[in-house]
Length: 347
Ligand code: FAD
Image (cartoon, rainbow, N blue to C red; front, side, top):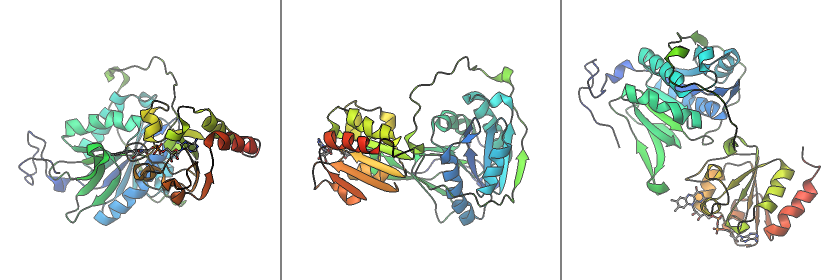
């Protein structure tokens, strides 16, 4: 797939947003932080973008928006950024889409990045369109693979048509080439302790009076983000609507609950906790699959977990082929027994 347009190469921006692509350079990654805490997807993207930038001979630029970002900027340099652009101002706390979107848009317009990668979090998906639409940029959402083609174009790949095909999306004539990326699909690189690049404070272009939204109150609901969890107990159709045994095990392990699509479709677990091709990609230290058969679409979302334990009463269930430890047992017995054994053992 590719976008459409005319007039490439003459240096002027046309009505339909076609631009001189040669004016655009560098690979940008948005560093998302809340209360000083950086979302791990930002570090995952920085590591992946380092490879893309090296392939293209471009600089890797991190962009952070928020308040009190000195530490965040240092961390971005230690994790491989050549340059960190920082928009530091109280107007950006707490997060609102309009000041973030407007600030991001202004920096993009001024500095002309070729590629912009944003984590596909609630925040990233909320404001990415506010940057892409005025720039007439190509924005590919929920990307799971990235590459560069022989012409140096970003190849953004994502499941399409209900996950039945993997589409490669190119943006030939518009810039920047933007994508929101699913958390958990890339591995974050460890900081190397060297921060050789530069930190650039950019002009803050928004004021509180310009913002159309105001945060009156923040209510915290089920904010669990399974992509950030170190331990996961995932339930499948085998639980037959009874979450309690798996919850006991999750409590004993201090783990988050996740689910297969079958369990989500039944309404037993919230869709935000679905693992797999059409759900989330996780890579925890420990993944316990409870009453999950191990369909290929499920495996796609969890096969990078460090240690996999499967509990299933069918010894021929495919999940056992992908598990480090298999327990052939009725989950209604095995989960409470394990929970009891583990009480007091885990931190
Ligand atoms: P089942 O396949 O029904 O397995 C239930 C398991 O529980 C069985 O192995 C059974 O032996 C075991 N069991 C039953 N009772 C007990 C008991 N008492 N004790 C112990 N074990 C027990 N699926 C996903 O998970 N995520 C996705 O993102 C996803 N995307 C999809 C996208 C597409 C395009 C398609 C076509 C499918 C997708 N699916 C996805 C669905 C996938 O193909 C499977 O249907 C689904 O993963 C099956 O879920 P399950 O393992 O919970 O259920």
